[in-house]
Length: 230
Image (tube, rainbow, N blue to C red):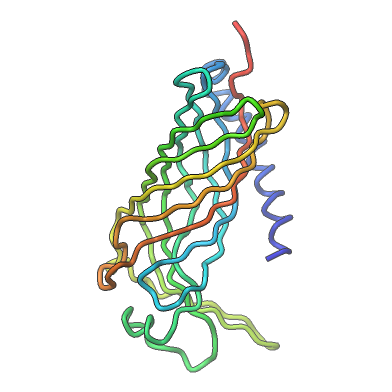
């Protein structure tokens, strides 16, 4: 995983540079408002599901965009979409696989339930004068793809198999999240934060109390955000 972090940062920065050019051409000065900040959100999350016997976390990257919309002097509406995000659970037990009706392979390996989702936060965000912030509110998810993933690795080979099970998963997820963070450059630069999400919806149709939960570490990069004064 440590080897993936520099690659992720490089991809994230490259994507950010291309996005700045595209967004500037499309929207221009519409994003240059003191009451609006637009940018990219990327990060890492550890997710689990309360309905599985396994309590191991699925570790994945996230990427999307956000809007900070000023409501009052220090109060903002924080929203956007994580367009690349996965929730689920890792290292499923034999009992978990039996409920999911997944036949085990002869090779030894790890099984994970993966839910590929669009994640939409709708948070109230309060920015403190020391450039820290707190945020919280409902978070929605649209789970448009789902599969059980088998990963096997030894000295001779690596293999991955995906068994799709979208019909066993509810399309919509919903719950609440809360978090905090800090914005660099006296409140005008990148933001680093953490949030915790707890779902209220049973996302696996055949598993009772199968609610998503996830800890997100995130980095926000403003793109053409509102620094221009009239």
